[in-house]
Image (cartoon, rainbow, N blue to C red; front, top):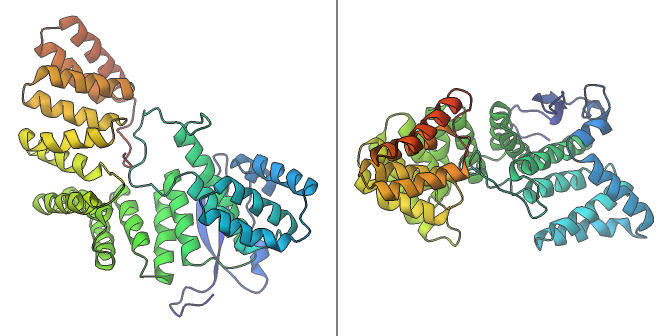
Length: 386
């Protein structure tokens, strides 16, 4: 792979430690170097690393199935898997790919496709607004969503690493690797892989969007603004980019530009089929910070209507009601926030204030005590919000 920009040829080399991923390295390739980049566990056992990623059991099951139901035409499995993936039949597509890889283990294309499928199967592409910390979200099989998504991201990285042994990854492959790291919270690694993807394909607006979000999560706010503005140059109707640009503007003190970006995001996203609460929450929160609770209220109500399962929405709505001294509404919203995120101190503290104003001294004391226990022992809500 040569792109004329001095990048050279690269493959993926993942150093695996006790928690699976320690770092991602660009590994220059020389003659025969592809074989030098396997996944390594602490003991050097590649299969153990795969199993630790949640991938080994699936692979073993697929191997057993393939041995008992081997195809006379294994090459037909790859186009079949592509067709199934296009139809959204992810489980069937995964089964076909794993059967194919049993017979064609050196197929980089199949490894990369399986890596993408695992990422997609975890709904990991919805990275800009993931479940709020403390939310009780499960997949259809009853698995905690956050853990389920991380397992899938790790398994995806296994496949991309394996594929890179046989063929250099392209821009789209590197983008998904970056997004896998974003799922896992390794922001520095996510930024590196997304930046490399964009060196290969600078016209990928989605990669610019996620690079901007990654830089925001790293508190590189000016760099986030630059990436998100580039995304919007390529895709001027990207409402999620506008929302994240608003967050980045607010972080560097450009408040009025942030408000304008949130309003643009709301206008753009109103035209889409999928409802997205982000800009309503962000605009309402910023207006609250500016002590404009009456203006914030309709936006926060809309955020709750779109995403009633996220405690952050109810917390900010409760705060707006409290500022307006509408205590019954504030109590209702904050009790819901506490129910959804019992381990977050701020909803407890705000609810204690409401109870205190209502003359419910004992209830107020319980909430303040709980807030004191939680404060300083629990991180603030995750940057990747619903």
